[in-house]
Length: 537
Image 1 (cartoon, rainbow, N blue to C red):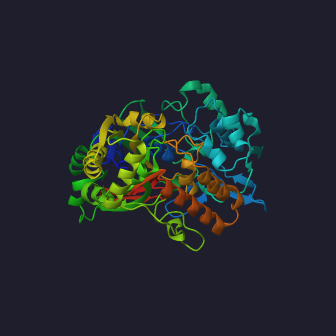
Image 2 (cartoon, rainbow, N blue to C red):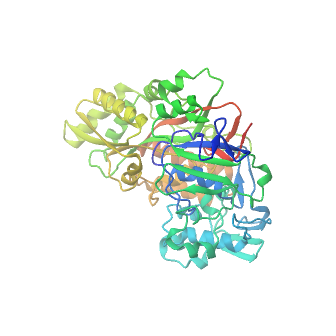
Image 3 (spheres, one colour):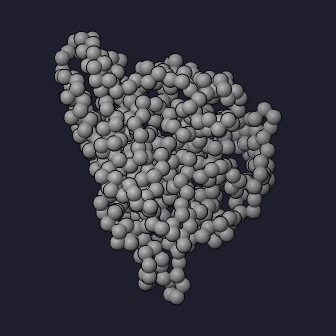
C-alpha cells in the first residue's frame, strides 16, 4: 500500500533433502507439491492485527481465516457457517462452525472478541484500527481514538459458537470488510503468553486458515508455510507448502523463472512487452491505483492553479505505454474501473458521470503562469519522493524531464529512499510530491474515499476539504441504505477531489505475470492473487 507492489509470484523452495522438478520437494520417498511466491519486500510480521505492508498481507491471507472469506468471485462462509442480520441491519449474529487453530485448540466466539478488541486497542498499535470504525462496529472509534474501554466494543460471545456484532449504523459493505485478515480470531491465552513476540516467529503464531508457518526468521528473505492439518476446509487445499521469497529485481526474477526456480514472476516494461504473446502471461487489471500525492502544506502546492498545471502537464500515456507496458491504464479518475459492482452489475466507475482534469499542455502552461503570478515568483522548486525500485526510478526520472520541460521555471528535485523506508517518509509527510499507490482492502468505493477524509492517517498529503468530508459522511450514514443516493454522494465527493486537485491520479495498475503451466491461482477483486486454494498439477 504506500508503494508499488510487484505482482505476487511463485518461487521454488529447495529446503529439502532432494529436489526432482521445480517446486516439488522430495522428503524421503514422498513428493510434496510446493508453490513459491515472489514478494517485493521481506515479511515483517505474522501478527494479523499489525500487518501493514503488501508482503505481509499476501502471506497472512494464506494463514488466517475470518468469519467470511473473499474468493475471486464472491464472499462466502469462512469460520462462520451462517449468520443472520436484524431488520435494521445493525446487529449480525454469526454461528461458528467446528474449527480449530493450528495447535488443535478450538476456535470460539471469544477468540473473535479478543482479536477485535485487540485490533482497536491503542496499546496494540494497529495501523488498521480504523477499519473497525469503517465497518461500523459499535464504539470502535471511541476505543481506538478517544480512550474508550475495549470491553465496550460492540462484539459479544453469547456462547462458544455464537458471536453477536452490534453496529452503530448500517454498513452496506460490512460483510466485505470483515474478510480482511485484521478481523481474524486471536487466541487470547496464546497471544498473552507470547507477549511482545506474538507473530514474530514460527512458534509465536497460530493459524486459523489454510496454511501455518513452517520456517521463518524475521528480516529474512524467505518464509515457508505448510498446509494446516487442522483447517476446517483442508480437503480444498491441494498443495502441501507455499514458499514466499523476496525477489529484489525483475531481471533476477525472470532468470529464476527461466531456470525453473520460480513458477510465476511479475513483469513490467520491456520484459512484459517481450512476453506479450506468450501463453503463460497472465494479465489482470488490478483495482490498485497509482497517484501523485501532493503535500498541501507546501507553500507552492497550496496554490490551486499550480496543482492544476501539474495535473494537466502530465502525459500519463507516456508512463503506461512507454514505461510500464504491463496492462496498466492511464487514469484521470480516483476510483478504479471494473470495481464495486451494484445489484444491476454496474461498476461504480460506470454509474457516475464526472468531469476530469486531462492532459493539456497549453492549458497547463496557462495555469502555471497564473500560479507564478499569484505566488509572486518565476521559479518554483519541488521535491519528488519515491522508492528505490527500478520502476519507480524510471517514472520519477520521466516526471522530472517532462514536467520541467513543459512548465518553465519548475525545478523538480528527486529524492530516492529505500523501499522499506519510503512508506514511513510518506506517512510522516516528508515530501512535496510523492508516488504512492492505494489498493482496495474490501470491495466498496469507501475503501478509497475514506483514505482522503481529513482525519484519516492515510491522507498522506494532508488535504482537508469539508465539502468532500460531508459527501463521504452522507454516503456512510445518511444514504447507507439507499444505494443510488450513496453512489451519487460518492460521485460528488470524487468530483471535489478532481476539481480541487486533492491528488493527481496517474494510472490503474496492470498485473502481468508469467505463470508456469500447471499452476492455477485465482486473482481476487481486491487486486492480488489468492494462494490458499492455489493448485498445481
